[in-house]
Length: 598
Image (cartoon, rainbow, N blue to C red; front, side, top):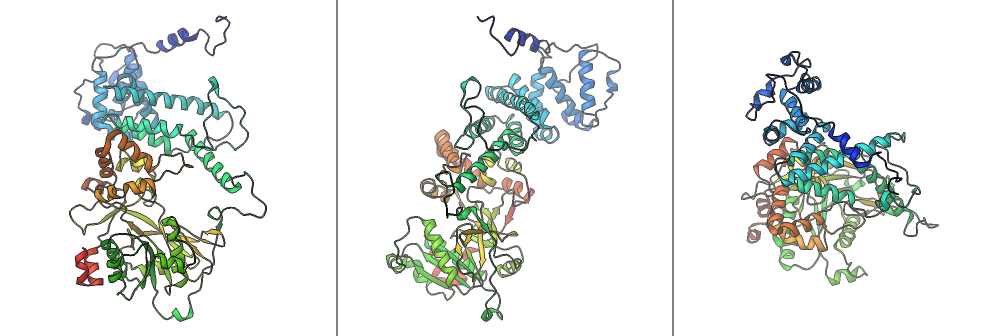
């Protein structure tokens, strides 16, 4: 019965192995020919340019010479170091090679990884990974090399077959009934529209394992970054299909259909809101701007937040204390530009509603209340750990006055504060790659282990905050957006050059202090409808595998703020040096009595 069994490859695995081994005969050499020695001067090879004709070989027809010439044609006009790399890969695919071949390949990647990554295309990088799989110096190199070889080999097979579907590689399939419930060998299909994590787990584990070895790590991270940034892969197509399905699901509601008389959820609709005209009684005065914030924080942080924005020219601060704080109240209430509201039980009773359960709901409530009562022309809704950072030489009022007249508001992109170290007046902030106009690949250069796991390389939010023109009836202020007539307002100008400084975790102590809350009730809670690797997942994995030391190393890589990190950020235009001078501003705004809290 086994003789009658149909197989894809006639002759079975004996035939497969025969065909494979037939291509692995060692190269032959003629007299005087030899592979470069182990102590070859690699720097010198960078200065030598390859010629397609390879005149240095004369008329030799050895196996070595034929491969040498083929590679010389491919690397014509390029440095000989790349040609040597190709020769090493070719030799290491054979059953035998000079004794030092693998060691020279290892030396090349240990000493010249940056040079090779900058000049070799993805095809050669995959070949290098395959070579590590066969000739790695340790288990990590061999394991990761083999895994990458299989991954990219299978991609080449199925992407080639997909070409015959006449559908461009960047175009995902439409949502429709699947042709079968099961895949080959009775495997269940990947949950495209659900919480399938196969892709994330596979790529994430490769990244983590590859990062354990310093020689192969740069190659692994470059290949995986190229993979996730390419829009012509199954990973990108499935991501687009998943996003479309989620949008459709939310539009249709839990029952799967749009109910009669009901519209789409407000956060899925977009609307261009009318821009209110400036009131006549404000026409002859300078532009007034203000801030609204619901705050629960130590007195020092409250005073620093308030003093900074008053000193920058805020006309009015609408501060809502989320719970009574007599010390903070005593200082804040005395300042004429602060409208202080204590959100105690009496306050919520006066609103004729119970105190809302979540901090976010209370934030939206007080922000909208302040919007409807302020006498400012513009109102910015931000948190106590956030600071408006207008561009150098520009005031906040000038920044807002420059917003086009058809835009209801301005979105300030976040700049995340780096650890400041010993100097309290040396604040600097980092930008996302998008804010600086870069592709995602730049993150792996700045944060080699964790950058591409986090949106924008940030450990805080990347959504930014809004400043809005006041006077639009019915507007509802949100956290990162605003709504009018049950739809999200879309005529919002995204500012460039001015940012929202976010002191999310300005030092290790602050990061660790707030971590448990953020993991259980705050911004690090896992969003179950998102199967991508999230901040909470990263923290859980770090604590599980390496404990507090691993978590501390993570923080230092992402927000350490050392000279090397700042230089890397500056190189890509992602560093914003912006001293806040908070202590001096507190004394200037609130007087010497406030020094006791600094």
